[in-house]
Length: 238
Image (cartoon, rainbow, N blue to C red; front, side, top):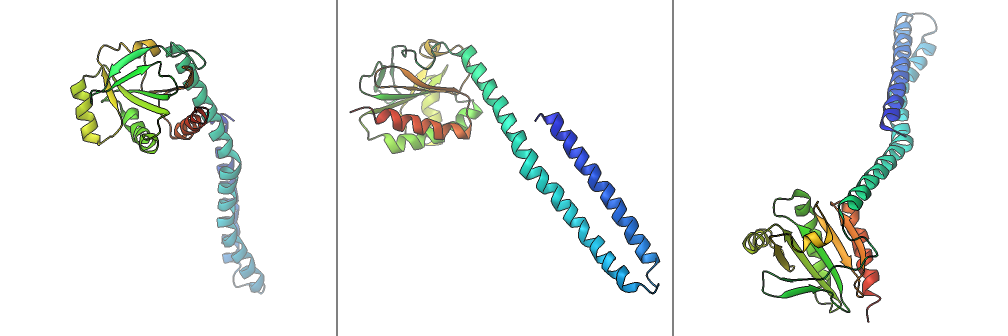
């Protein structure tokens, strides 16, 4: 169902409800006019039925919209969104799921070295920028993942600031009180091995060096999928 179709259906239901409302109002006026006739009891009953019918009609209309048409519209919009994200990923990514992850070595702002390949470790890489709104929405979830897995020797994480300096990354981490390892990539030396543009970008590399997860942008549903991928990959590492 397209958005235009949904709008047409809403208009039709609204028009039907308006007609029913007008009919009910005419009936109500007619009953009031005939109020003092001998058939008063019948008028009272019809009056009560007409008054009660109005909220029922409104409720039926809303139920039809919420139970029938809105879910279909939501599924279509989600499918369109996923198709757009898949197209963006394909057009901007240099290494796809199933490819070998490119080698790199970075020094974090804490002075530690993070590198690929990293044998026998599942590596989570996140590219961000301090000015990026979606990145700031995603990183608290990355921090939760780090809190959960930081003591697992099979797991490694690095959050990389694209076109950021060590100073800007350190200031950003301090402001947001993140605990995960962070590094700067001021010249895009590492980022350019993975992609041409767009952040946030999240990648999971398996213990044997293959890219098994790759997403661009951030949506809440991504976190469940990311956690599932990490759990599955860690289960394969002895």
